[in-house]
Length: 586
Ligand code: TSB
Ligand code: ZN
Image (cartoon, rainbow, N blue to C red; front, top):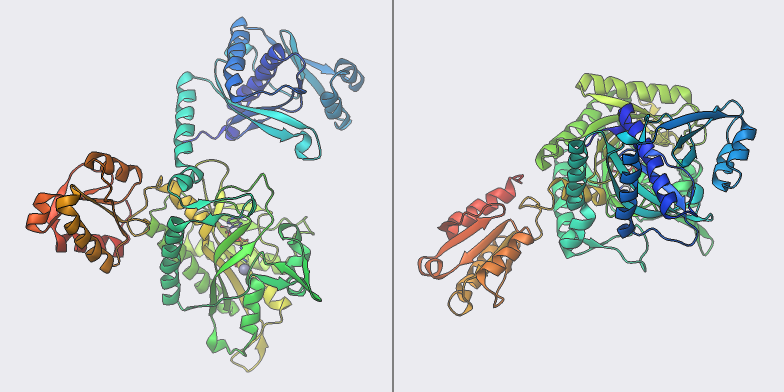
């Protein structure tokens, strides 16, 4: 498992000191180099470097590492020195980056710098006592980064690295990174032709290829059936709305920075929708409701558009065009708990079906000081937040709290998972909302004949099909369970002249049993075609030769096993259809 460097102060100091060692080595090799900041991050450290017109390439990292090792062996002590602002400005007078840092320090900041041999850097510290202890490090990659993260500023080069106390820990971490690279859904997505991107379509706008479309369709069917059984009614609504719709909901005031800009058509002002709640509120409002009709559950597989920073978009995990497995549940205040429990139980059931075990529940609360993001009604918020806590405690669900992560309309229960690469993301979400029903003036008639305002629960079990697919590809390392696999059976006739006819027969039989089957009739050696079948991670590979033809049998290999099993046709179809029906996890 990945070490939590943040939690480990000692590792922090080690990594931060290693960033200085990197800078010193770079200065030796590129004397013109200037340095901006070199912080510790979750998986190590980086340093942002201005090299003028010189460029550090991946292949240069080895050379820099060598220099770092040399400096480390030299074993210079690391000295701390405290300076007045004037002294600091004088000391770093030839370095515009450090001058910028000094000028931005408040008056009560203690300005300090650290020196090791011929290298001095402005730094708060603390550091290790000597470069001698920096032995087990590795430079990982180099990328571009703008000064202060602003694309209008100068482009700098960011070199990443990681440092550990022992060689074993470093090796373990590097092995983890290697494994993570293999699991990265962007790699699997490309290899298995699940999705693609094209600059002409735009960043964060994935195109789902046929294989991806099959997976997505399976996910849709799966969750649709589950929701129908729980009394959901599904709808289709447009993926645009007028600005006025989003003014009514409050998105225009509280969510605008996440939205695509307005477009004008005739006299109407439209936006691409970032969420589907307003549309569903209007569907609720289309009819009069009695308390007897509630809960009303409106579901939709709905396409949304959100502005995500170009540096943040990532494969299918963080996109600008996404499809939510969304629903809005309209309930009376008395029904909140039971309805919430139904949603949490659905989440747990789905995770069980997919074999998902590593996740955390996060209670996402508002930041009381952020009046811009959050609707300003303390009583409403306190009520909603307490209600959620009550439900969680009753369900005995372990969770942690996160301030400032709530939606603008209410607190959320989010499920957090860790992708192969990068920070944690939210998969499922279940949110409690007293605000939107009020803003849309929704009502139902209670048992005394009086009008009341319903409460809304927003929920997305998969989150989005996009993010869920990314996650499942990483969880399974691309070896999808048979029911989700784009190709479920790959048939290899040993010899076309004698066995192709039989293979075609089996192909049609499987097809008629709604199995996704493929026939590899290429004139290639059996061993070659079998190897390819394994590379493509097909769940079942059939090898049909003379014995199979003569006795009407099927010989198959399951992915991950090199045992060939021979059974009757009926037995094979039964085994396969049962595995698909039961959604057996690998
Ligand atoms: C649940 N109105 C609610 C809805 O009714 C809503 O939109 N909630 S949300 O903002 O939390 O988004 C729902 C889910 O979408 C999140 O839980 C997350 O899993 C997924 N999601 C959010 N942003 C992205 C993105 N940029 N790319 C892929 N999936 C995303
Ligand atoms: Zn919603």
